[in-house]
Image 1 (tube, one colour):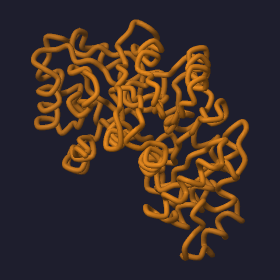
Image 2 (cartoon, one colour; image 1 turned 180 degrees about the horizontal axis):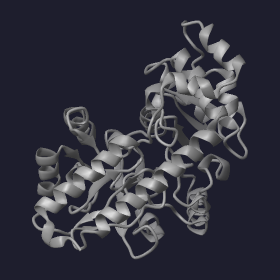
Image 3 (cartoon, helix red, strand yellow; image 1 turned 90 degrees about the horizontal axis):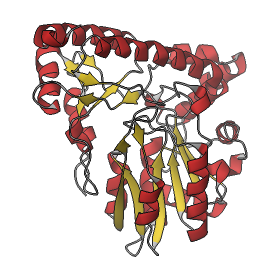
Length: 383
């Protein structure tokens, strides 16, 4: 299995750069601030919490609260996990074997591609630039053409990392019909659901729509609480969850008791948290509108439809790798160049970069640093 390019890159630079402008999560909060969102009973329960082992499936109240975020799920339809990465790994290990075939859109979060590739044959479906709202699309005809007799899993991610792509309801319904006719499982990575820039664009959750749909989510991204390391999958098929739970015995075994208690408080306060995060994203997206608009011809920028990352195209002199390197070395601004999203499965764009716009003060300072850098190095692009 090849090295995880994104994590290798971030492990080197994330805590060295002055301005982390490619973060894939929303601004986090302190334990104190999160506890303040809970009621007195929640706060007391946290303080009196035992630090013993927890239930492998997750604490029953947490599973029930997670289930309430879906239209048709009950607590028994939810399995808690140690972050979303454990879900991506375990689902592939449970569903796939060397005789299987999987389909994965690219570019993508690398483990969605690399883990299935370590097990079976995988076909990559390109996410293409387009004139549609948001600037990207996925073609159902590409997915249809990729399906084989032994296709077992289609792995999707909406809102998509890094493009922010969302699929229309009509396309989603057609896709489910295609997979239902062939018995193909759909893994829906929905970690950015809830922070669409326009809530009207929000997609339904896969577990609610399809009997072989698996919804993956986590407290890390839309909720801005990656330090909790609490994720989950939801599915109508209990037997599938049981298989993943047994595989979990070889991985995390169970989750952290304090993290589960804090995740429960956050989910009970999700309206407050997601509203705050949505307002922050709108403010930050407007700042990027102004920044890139003031230097026409340097960056081709379209707001993503959902999530807190975008994948704009660099159109200035040289190439995007040199552009990102100069920002980092000269101005301390960390962006993610397109090479990090290279794929073994299909050609991916080489002239883009990932920028995150979910953080608070560091984002504001980073935008100022980028503006100063552009004024010094690319003044001839300024309005």
